[in-house]
Length: 245
Image (cartoon, rainbow, N blue to C red; front, side):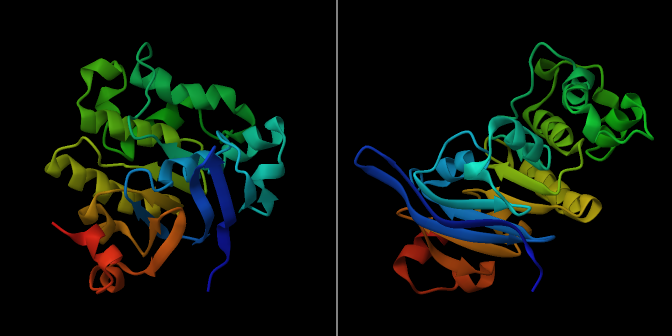
C-alpha cells in the first residue's frame, strides 16, 4: 500500500445543535482518485473547507505532508496551500482579468514556488496547453463557455504543480458532452501531473469513470467505502440510494 498524502481522523464540526461532521475519517494515497459522494447537507462542503483551512473543525486532525492543518498558523497554512490545487464548483475566475492574467496571478503571489527555468509566458502557455485552451489566452471569462471556464480554472489550479488536487463538483452545471470532456481531462491530469485527487461529486457517471476508490458520506461519517463496482452493487438501502437513475 502506498503512503497517504492526506489523512483525516475523527473530524467533527457542529453549528449549534446541527452536528454536520460526526467523526469523519479518510486516507488519500499517492496517485489515487478518491471520490466522496453524499447528499446535500451531509457535510461534504464543510469537510473540504476544513481541509483547506477556510473553516476550523471542532476536533479531529487533518494531516498533509506530516503537517496538522488544524494546528498551523496563517503563514504556514498559506505555504502548505501551494501544494494543493482547488477547482471550485463555480470556477471562481476573476471576471476583470483576462485568461492570461488569471493564470499569472498565482505565479506572482508564489514566486518562490515557480519553476525558475521557465518564463511566466512559458508556464501560462504550458498550463493552457494541457487543457487545450492556448488560443483563449487573451479572452475574458465572460467570453468563455461554462466548460471553457472550468478548464481555465483547472489550468490555474495546476500551474504551481500541486501534489494534491481537490475537485468540488467538477461537472455541475455542464452539459453531458462537456462533462465527459472534463472527466477525461481529470484522468489525463492525474497521469501528467502525478496528482492525488479528492473529488466531491453528485455525478454517478463521473464517479464511475474517475474513481479508484469511493467513500459515501452519510450523517457526517464515512458510511461505506470501496470501489465503484463494490458500492454500486450493494444491497444496503442507504448505499443503493446513491446509484438510482
